[in-house]
Length: 158
Image (tube, rainbow, N blue to C red; front, side, top):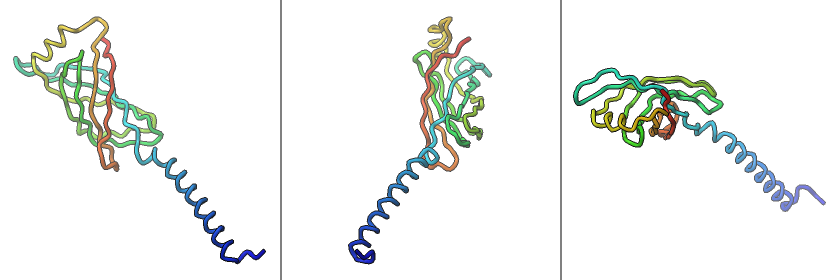
């Protein structure tokens, strides 16, 4: 049997293309984690009253951001809403850039404003177990074209 017959060449080319396709697909699957990073784990670790007037109060919310990825992520900005004890409390934007090393974390203080009625509603539901909260928002990561959403529910202990 001759190896240069058209049928043998066709089989060789087909097998080579299939092998290359499998290699490319497996490479793409392993690189998807590098292309689309997991969102950071965002938690509320502190609330500090900064300024108060009759109708408006300003707070610094301290957020902890943890990187669940095996690569550094550079966060350009963070947008979020804070829901405390089931009621919308405040929303904010942090434009402070944050570089999170692989599996590392960092804290950021974000100034937010809230109205007196929202604060009174939340204080009436305050329990000795702490504040139940939900943070919903998104981060803009350097080099990634769209915002990556996050949501975190937890309890801020006294």
